Amino acid sequence: MKGLRLTIAKQTVSSILDTLGDDDFFNIIAYSEILHHQQVHCKNILANKTFLFMFQHFREHLDKLFAKGIGMLDIALNEAFNMLNEFNHTGQGSICSQAIMLITDGAVDTYDTIFAKYNWPDRKVRIFTYLIGREAAFADNLKWMACANKGFFTQISTLADVQENVMEYLHVLSRPKVIDQEHDVVWTEAYIDSTLPQAQKLADDQGLVLMTTVAMPVFSKQNETRSKGILLGVVGTDVPVKELLKTIPKYKVIHKWSPLFHPFSSGILPLKPNYSSVDLSEVEWEDRDDVLRNAMVNRKTGKFSMEVKKTVDKGPNSLCSKTKKDCACTNNFLLF
Image (tube, rainbow, N blue to C red; front, side, top):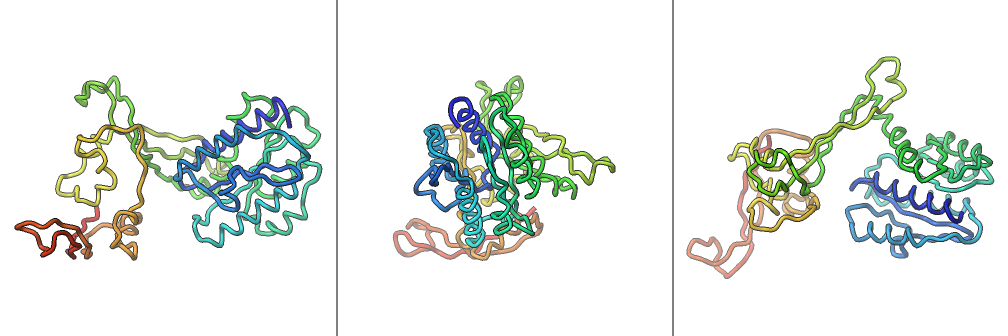
């Protein structure tokens, strides 16, 4: 796999990484007669985009790949299945869809013995195969591997084909949700963007404000196609954070919202290009049983109280007798 084929293969891997979200875990394995993990310290683990520094390292090492030796696909498949099995036992993942993306310029076998050992009859791991190049000599083997493991086969001949062909795996993974008619709404992290030509309405001279994007899938509801689970696309819109705050009554903006808006609510700190999400469990340490977190995730309404600890300074109105200590207090939480 040299020259243009290697370039297409790298671009294919890069495009797949672009489709991943913060909740997706991944690793990249380059193989010949031996295995080469993209990062030595990432061997046998699955990383995700939350660890931005690690994600950037993957991209950097991807550019350094070069062709060498003979591709022993059986070694690579064994390693990939073992890695997924180990990850399942850690309990870190969402126990959702798992997949192996195979980017190759050929496969001399169907490797059915490996699939029989690790993946059949349940077929919990989908196999997506990408044949790089114009030759079709190995297309049948790769197509069989994908179809026998609930995946999808595609051939990528040119760089122009990469983006369109990579997106095909999303249609396969989305089928169960499409068939069940599940409309999952996704909100992105905060980022800076221009609202022009509406900037003047928001009294923002530069037109750069904090934004978030809300998106949801669009799929076919026709009875004749419902069983096929056809995803038509995604619809979304950008929403200025200021507009969201306007819709929330002030008495409901309790400190529970601070993990979302604290970095920029005061207007004093400089705007950053992007903001990272923080899980509520990392902010409310006293919520050890995830009572508040689960209530918010499950969209429950009502109110409840929970004892938390708050650090206060010594002063005339201080509740603590020493210079600084943790004091227990009761906070009321309103869920709406």
